[in-house]
Length: 454
Image (cartoon, rainbow, N blue to C red; front, side, top):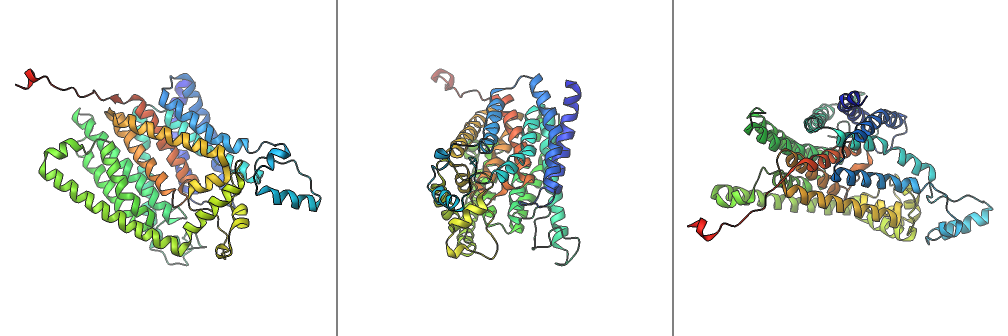
């Protein structure tokens, strides 16, 4: 049974990711597609659990599994009933208690103000949970295949985005008729296309570093290294087409991080070569110019689209809902009650456009504690990658750079609110932790004795 599970795990995971890309590109779905994707995640989750139980789990993977379970525990705990005196602790709930008393309504209060929405949010984690555990359970060569599959999916979406962009606005072949999706492809939000392209860029850099190492041992074609770098460059060029201001500000730093942490660029070697040093300084200058331009675009974005104002209001609403939080999935209703007149728009505000602020509003102190633990785990993983080398370090570094880019974009948008990017990011995180667990530690540099230098 265990051999069958290992043999089926990678194909099942790839099928799940393909399905998530085909049907999970929207943030709010009024069809049954999300439910079907959650059901499809169940066999993948079962296979992953079978494999993980039968094999030794290294510490990084165990810590990652604990972090994922803690994230899922937050909405699960919010479904529990609470005593009325504890439920009424947040100051914002005082008015609700008074209104219920006037109306003569008695309820059994749950932690969450919107238990049904919180339950839906909990079930929505199934594809990401299955993708993460399955990636953790894969052997090294299958982890490489998984990253290659993710890159192919992102590349196919870019090709489909070109096809969509060439269609007339009223074409029946357009996926999203309610608004112009531009260069989003299967993703309804074009900002999320930028996130996907940055993920593809970082993974391509990691695959290039891995291919270079394997070519030295005769395990890969020498030209594969160059093809992966060219693909990373293509993904970088696609980011401006998404028109995402935050994506432009993140892309170049993410590329630099990916080149450094995967070992493709070594600072000490650069310092020894004048030509390499000049090229590096020119690249840094271009990166600074790009970041400055991106930040300027983001400033315009805050003024015109009021994203900064939304985040400020959400922070204040979160303070009123502390320490419990309003409940995962309750953002729309809570924000509408707290929003000032200038934010009463024709269309309702579905997200705070800042994932950390929205998490604070909906989960309170418990959620922020879990978030701090996840970020600490990511930081420790990055430090371990820097102190490692080999194939595992290259793939883990690519995953680390991709995750940092997603988390950075989450400061100005909500890429993890789609099943597509949530499942993809979870799979990349699983590859990162499983790869760094088997990476070879770097030997500490030792000083030569004076007699050896003579």
